Length: 269
Image (cartoon, rainbow, N blue to C red; front, top):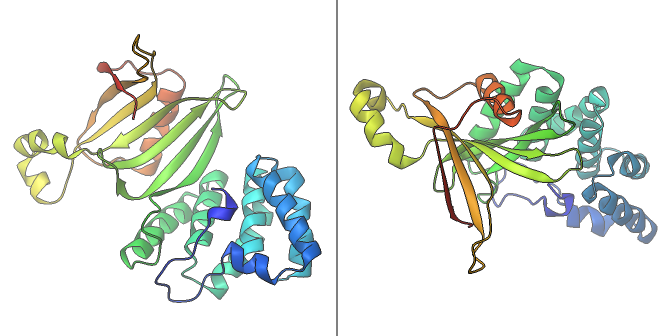
């Protein structure tokens, strides 16, 4: 997420420093460096932004905002050991820092530490239940993988099922130039649950749900100028997939594996 948009929860067990609070305590010269680094960060130029953030962190040792931003740069640059050294002290000082937890979850996912990844996903969900995460935050990036065609897939983990279709996981598929091609979702829409309950009444009573794999991409523009979106359904599963099952299926769909069971076009939202 753009680092300027990282905000503090209204209810926290311990105060989480915000970007504006950090900016206000920096000197005028430091603010210039910080603003320059921020622009590079938002442009995806993490290698160029990193030394600027590190310079500021040397001047402001232990600052949590600088540590988290520098850690995110390190994760994007595959420097996982550096990211860990930055994230761990932040969480040691404030175990309810939800931003640091999302970074640790991503670090674990990217580095293949499945146990820590799953623990962090559960902790973030618990922080949400305790109202320690801003309510408007629905998901966070957790893993980016390269694709054989030179593109990439960026997977998001939902903090809670969100939207009309109850999205549990979401991914963006990019080409080698970074252009967004389409989106893939793991959904559990309410309208899919009555047939599930009819077919699996005991599971439904126990809280089970039906899930679907879907994809969305920009469709043709109609003669009247109306933009459309193409939707494809890639089938249902009657038990919530694990993270690894979801990831495997997302990667299959991202590389052209599997045929949709149905497709339709509708007005773009």
